[in-house]
Image (cartoon, rainbow, N blue to C red; front, side, top):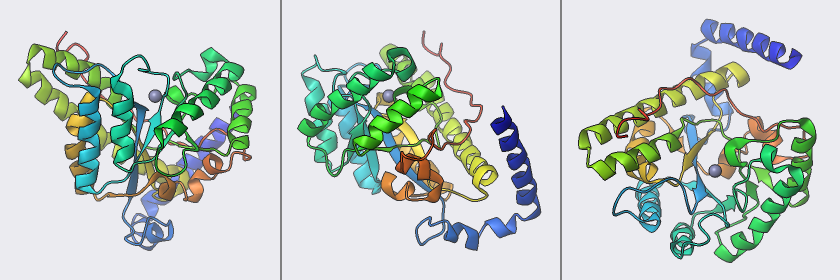
Length: 307
Ligand SMILES: [Zn+2]
């Protein structure tokens, strides 16, 4: 409780400072944060739930989804990191090919747990075993670079400090860094609605989904910048949470164009998390939880658009 009050007081103080010194935050300070040489705000894309995320629209395979995502990233020259569940979709012969599309595009792959367990529900012992089990599948997938990046399923780090510290200790001992999330807009919510609308061939409903997706992405980006200003007094490099879903694939070219129009550039996850804001995600001997920013209120898709 006291931490929350302290955070609110800091938040209020920085908000006042931001109002008084708006021009001071725009130029030299942005450069000093290490947002590459350009000084513009930057985003690191991350895609969770490789190889299986969400329902598919008719006529689309998971390999198609992954091919579309990696083609878009390559054409736009946007780096990205993926997060892998070796035990999800293991009974689908298409899963290894889906993962291979990602790795053959030269994109790195980190650990997201073998079965995508929630830490709270599974308990620390089973959760740790599941993370370790996923390493065998990760090594077999032969991703580019070091796979020792971990993204918590459901972003859940444990309901009590003891289990959180147990898992941080295990991850540290195995050489992991934690992939933080400092920009998110609930992208995954659109995938099932899109699949339903595509099944009905409802083009008007899909157009509305496209609009609402981009509107929430914009809101979340603005909110992350405001949150960073309040919490750190400056822009930080943002780590964006996405998922390997069909609607994510469909919208990715427009999403990248939106961020570019808002002035963002793009960096790797490692580049983003070299910022001191992420120190507790990079060095797991430091106390948790993983640094983050508050999630803004967003509209989401109309869940009944095509039900
Ligand atoms: Zn996930």
